Length: 259
Image (cartoon, rainbow, N blue to C red; front, side, top):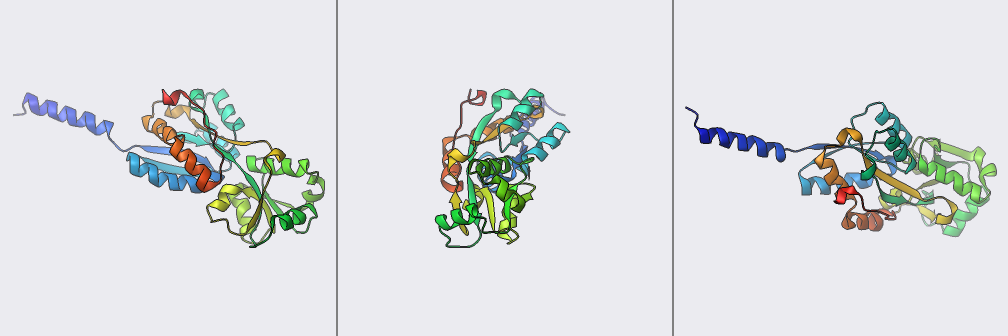
């Protein structure tokens, strides 16, 4: 015979198993943040017991997937405007948005020991066959690359030599494989490879800030684990790590997640 106490003990076990059950957080991330996120995934999963499932691509393609019903919980965009569109369309929760990183653009050559001056001269004097940039229609880093060339009054002369990656990751591969001599890529990509090759860090006044915005998507409104990961991402410890190890600037702001 099952006693009253046995029934209650079983109920308590069921309640606690739900509370502590491992949850999977589905994160869609812009390509430039894929490698840092893979490293953060190990750290977060160890500390929290939760599981991160990562999907990556260009910001525009991930946006299209989200509005077409892709089952993501968190979106780590490479800009703010795309997140703004999701919020406007009620696809994301406004008071969970924050800037998790500010990207830096560099002119990169896979060849080692090239001086900054030499890279600048090659760039301005068109001493290359191909310059790789991310597709500006899909990727914020590509739009920043166009701004740099226009502000330096080089766009008209360099335009015929441009080759476009679908995202900043593919752009990096064009240069790494030798299919393009130079590329305008994310500093974070070079940091992840111990700064292979040579690069010139583009002055920040030549392009608008690449404010990379994070947000919880509406489908995950009640997902406690998603909110926990967002607190982890914006914590001073992780923000310092993103700056020191991956070459991003930090610019977090308080949100309702902290209350």
